[in-house]
Image (cartoon, rainbow, N blue to C red; front, side):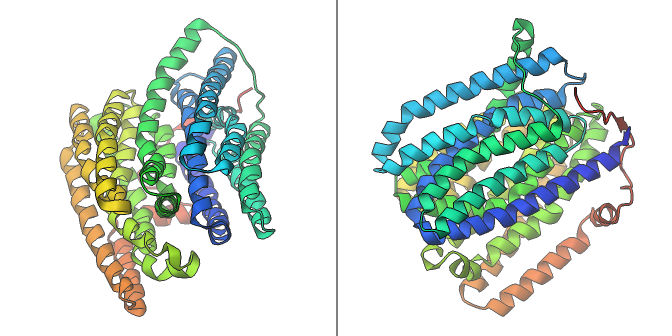
Length: 482
């Protein structure tokens, strides 16, 4: 038996280690591929990454089902999860195969055909990997997920970097895309002590399907604009602009991986709480404060100083990235907070609210994106992010129904606007080449943020290993699933 608070802190450390290593590995790989392959190859790669991302999104249904299930999953339930997940992956693979000739012709790229087929081979096994991870994460044991996800990045970037340095950047992306999914799935299954089993029971399959399709839908709606937005905008521009937009979002996402950590942890943690409005609100506030503690200085430093480091790291052709990144700061921070709110609602079985929110978000997003891209060129995409924030009113309304305070949400939004203003001011200083002033102001602003943070003491206790003051002591089983 393990202490609840210790399990949460241990899981957080695993994910921070995973995403810290992931950042280093991905960043090195990106630099090599971008400099050797150029913007056009990166644009082609962005399309294949969207296909891979959807394989991952389709895997979240059974993952979420296993985590939120109050009872230990039975052998039959696990077997039905593997069967359900395989059917979803087959369906998506057939859709991509059917679309591949059209996409290759539209973007005038024969390489895209091979890369998409390789991505299908690698991405198909993601569903099985997520099931193995879900069975461990439901017990607040995150080692399996960390090991499998790091192995995914090591395999892909190891192959891609090696072949790029040998003068074959495209084949590096192709072979790496095939091997990453297969290798990381094997790591997950072995480290979790799991084996793939298939079974079918109509009642169990219906139960899994009802939860999974709702959960998958709102997760796809949540992340599709971030992953597909650059691809759709690039379809109206060029592969070079597609590469520019995708790398801008990818670079900003390096700091936003904290959102992924928080969302994954919060779904597990919130599911162990009762339905008391006061208790949930206290936990939600603490989760948001912990997320923003590192996210704001992380994203702020990356964006504010981007005019200085982008030409040095990626090269002069990529300098326009800083314009995109500065515009999307506030929408990114706002959506990070909304993601945590959605985790809270989902953990309590209130999936309708998040699904409705992201549904309205996407209904507004895509036509606005097309209109603004045609009017504003590559800047149409980041400006769209501001316009569609009006859909947040839907989620705020759902919070009121759950008995949570709306004043708290509005206070956070004002705080995020203030942070955005500071980042933008430092960014303008960096644009005008006042490097020393920009760096000094960034350090001062980050220090002040840490000092005034309401969770600074808890973060200190977490780092030093002492129990967090408000940690709820509960027990969870540490026995692995047979």
